[in-house]
Amino acid sequence: MSNLKATAIVETPYARAADLVERFFTSQSEGAGTMRLSAPGAGRGIDGFAVGHDVLVRFRRRQRKNEAIVFDLHWESASGGPYPTFGGTLTVAEDETYENCRLILEGSYTPPGSVAGAVFDAALGSRIAHATAEELLQRIRKFLRDTFEASEATKRSAQG
Image 1 (spheres, helix red, strand yellow):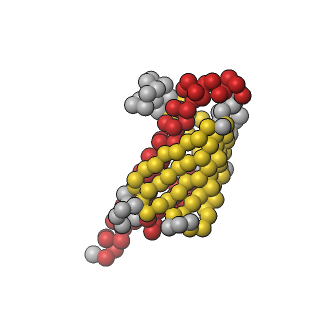
Image 2: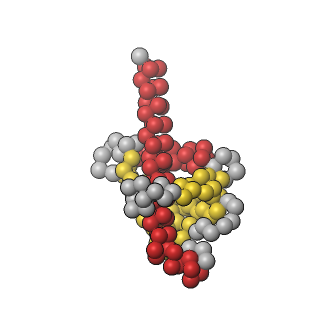
Image 3: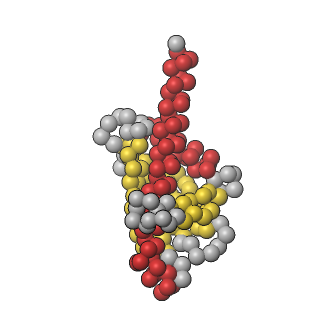
């Protein structure tokens, strides 16, 4: 089993972020719980290499925990194959300013293929997993920022 942790600062107020995270997963999962994950290689030490596949995603919002909102998160390959299964959490936490929040994705995954999978994970798989986590956080970040900005623009236009 391998551990994974990635964080992102999001230009969205903490008070709005958890609801938007929930909307992100609902909108991305196409109603069937399937979402595309990818790991672009450029700039992450995996030059010229990209991996993408569909995963079945399950998420559940928990109550606040120490001034943060936590989602249980699990995904596994939608079509089987040599892809890891992930289990962990996505935490929406306050940041230093009202305008921002932090997203923290952490958990563990099991590389497929027992010994061969562990060797692949040590050589390349862990970098793919971390690139996938970073890419997912950037997609969530963009969704939150764009959705929040659009709602604020709508409010401004309605007021004046």
